[in-house]
Image (tube, rainbow, N blue to C red; front, side):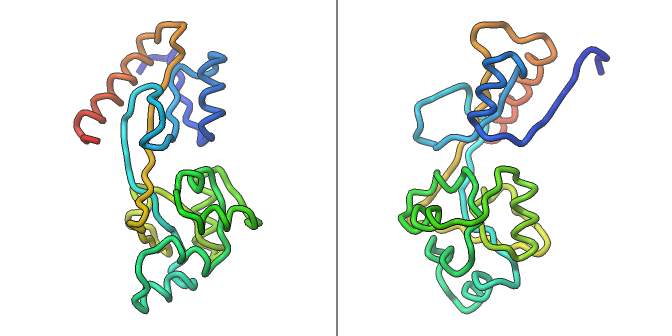
Length: 178
């Protein structure tokens, strides 16, 4: 480890990530995009979005009783909004966003809110494997996906430590095909 290298990891929305990279407050940023958005930076991962819900809630009961994995399940509980909701191309999600009373931009807060039974939210399937107290379904119609992309400021060269991190993330992508 290099004593002059500082690694900070923050859970921010994509606009904040872009701003921090542009203003040289961060060397590398990782942000969420739609899979079909115009390319920006380098893609490092893609995953499906779905509904995260409390295992004791109305969505869990509906699923246990045979309800299909559908975005309409979100009507059964209050929606906990987050920026990933904008990536779901289903009218129910857009409808619920208009009347939503709770929103969080931090993944840890979203998981805690769901675990406490405050409602259901939309999260990527890669986050919810083996989470105690949380159920998850991934509706297939329409399928919603997100892409993680890493960006840097094109007006300056990465320092050696940041360049190594960039290469490591690119290697991750290469070993986990999109």
